[in-house]
Length: 272
Picture 1 (cartoon, rainbow, N blue to C red):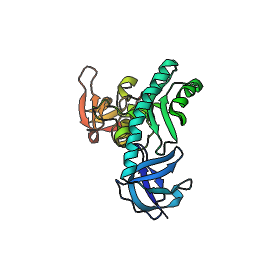
Picture 2 (cartoon, rainbow, N blue to C red; picture 1 turned 60 degrees about the horizontal axis):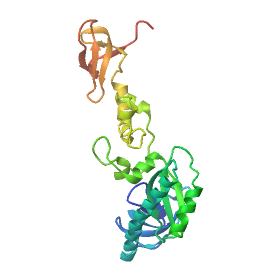
Picture 3 (cartoon, rainbow, N blue to C red; picture 1 turned 120 degrees about the vertical axis):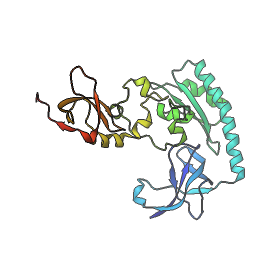
Picture 4 (cartoon, rainbow, N blue to C red; picture 1 turned 135 degrees about the vertical axis):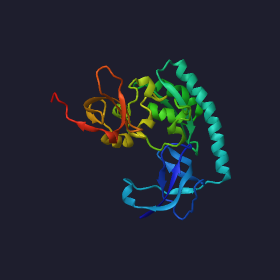
């Protein structure tokens, strides 16, 4: 077992674990840590706890120290200056007519580096951009291309449901979302209707995927044949998985009749 604390950066995304040494942290505290991007300030989400060290593929880094009020002031100043830096970044991208979408600028806590995030459909040759940016900031400049899902998390926005997008508000990791999940839930297969602002399939499609897989074992699917209280052999033409109701075509010219799934019995197709 190893003692760890969980830290989140910029108030979103996954939680990273560090060794707290002899420092006691509570959720809501702030910590100064060293990451691959440099020295950063992060918010403690998970206080001191013991976890099996086999869960970690690499050795964890130590927390440098607990953040104080002065550190929070420095972080706020960095964030404000990053907003101004981002405007310069966007201006230079437009001036050089680069095929990239600027997303955000970020100073590391110790101001040894400034990172500019962007998305692009293809790889971008940004050597000229670096030549324009580096003299203006007089420190190490890093341009980081990220995916559209990560980009949506970074800038935020509202989903089709009218709420803040999940990846910005609470989702820590991106799960696999497939078109089959949408089909299993009888959703429209129109990409425009089931895609988020990132252009990818909405993450929420995966939330109920397990439930629908269980329901499909109970409720006959459209196209199967069933025996109902009034028909020995009729086709299922409609399904409501949540209510566990099927609609069976009991006669060629009649309206489909609704039954609960427990009232019908699946039968083999006669043409097989």
